[in-house]
Image (cartoon, rainbow over all chains, first blue to last red; front, side, top):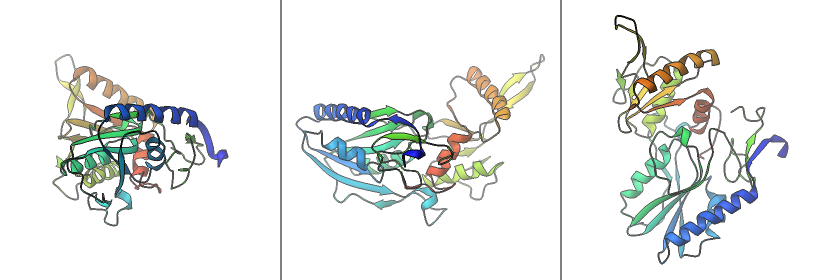
Length: 179
Length: 117
């Protein structure tokens, strides 16, 4: 597996340090409030798991998954929810947790949909920001790192469903991933 | 001018058709090549060169240019983009170069196999 790696972009120490910093910000800003964290599957899981272990405020967790264009059974269809939240979010403080935000299309769709459910507040926390790819303007209230244009894997991010479990964020060798 | 209201639009390139499908999937309104911006004039003031971004997304007031060309042609296009930005600084234009575009296609499951990131 390590022989597939070209370069480590964010190592374990850098990731854990930044996750701690983000958690401290969240603890401070949501002090005295209960927070529902909504993880967007599948990429969020490592980031979310590490993040919540540093949170000291009362939290609850839920997850969502939405369809991706090319993986839909109907190519002419529109985006749809594969896994919805288990409970209503009305009058709750909600924080969406994403591994990476690039075009903002998925996040924009989610924000629009969740706003209609009348949460008390709705904010976004993303580990990685590929802002040069942004099409839809979306607010990132908490952001781990700006990524630039690189295609990365690890710490939840995959290439053909592989490499999610790597404890760091890295670039793959060109012969493995030509992007 | 083609737009998201029409089905089975005809595009100059397959990449543009794929991109339009992604926008449709996310219910983003788009227009295909709706505006041609003059970027060069002769001494008499006649327009001798225009730049026509591939897409306009009215909800975001954003133009999108897809560049899947070879590097030599990319350089030519970059010159046009630079002129557009100088002459029309109020225009929001996003360019997706070949590698960026392939990354997007992969992410959205159009080229190769990627997952629901």
